[in-house]
Amino acid sequence: MRMTGRRWLAAFLIFAAGTLSGCKRTEAPADPISRSAFLLNTFVTVTLYDSQDEAVLEGSLDLCRQYEELLSTTIDTSEVSRINHRSPDETAVTVSQETAELIRKGLEYGERTEGAFDITIQPVSSLWDFTSGQAKLPDPELLKEAAQKVDYRNVHVEGSQVILDSPDTAIDLGAIAKGYIADRIKDYLLENGVNSATINLGGNVLCVGSRPDGTPFKIGLQMPFADRNETIAALNIDGLSVVTSGVYERHFELDGVNYHHLLNPEDGYPYQNGLLSVTIVSPLSVDGDALSTSCFSLGLEKGMELAESMDGVYAYFVTDDYEIHYSEGARELISES
Image: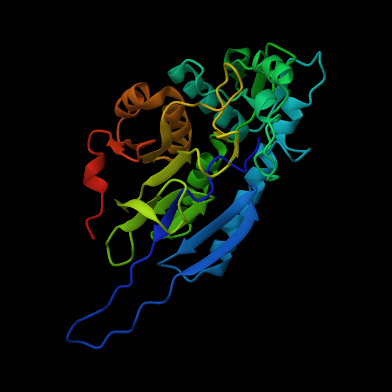
């Protein structure tokens, strides 16, 4: 899995300064504490607003490391690597409950999108290089051959066993893993008494509750192809996840064409469907992660249908004319200040 990602800070926090007032003299609240680390091939930042517990903060990053060691395609000892590097005659691989659960969730979105979202994209994604700065296309014949190996229907999960129908099948959970990990970190923080925090996994932003004063966190939606500080909107978020998939973060341009990391499983090339980005707001970040890719892959019309079919999900589609298209109820989260 190239956890590098699909989304490099496509959404980010906008922090607003607050003041305390009143007739009594009160002690100013402690400043938030924050810790960052380079994990999952991106910058991970956890910020606590109602706790000064450094051990809990460090524990959240340790948890992220543990999941990276399970789910990464670039760590040889990970469970995903064991699946991908199994012997040709090995049709079943035993994995942890967490890995099995995430693969099952990925297969669910394969079914929902009829393969537009496909966790067996690894043979294709491994041929593309969006990190070296070199604008180079994969060999067309190799890409065609790789695309023929992509089919989520060749993977089944039975308990803790991952069953693979084809020796050519390889898994990349990069389109869903960050969301899953963010949810697990949120669970950990809540279990340790933290009720106000933000978890930012390279653009997957998950809020734990609201700010200590009860006001929502403000999450900015980045203007495509602009400086990361330039936004097209800001959202009021209380206890929800915000995940964006866009064509402008992991990409390169060649001969006037923008090639990005959102790859079509059918032919192995990036989708060219008139969309610049899709942002999903959802209760669970794992769903936001999968849906942002799924809805982008399906295009504006079918992607909007998918988003609106799911409870508690709000979607923001930005088309190549920079117009924002909102799912039902999504406008209500837009911050006016």
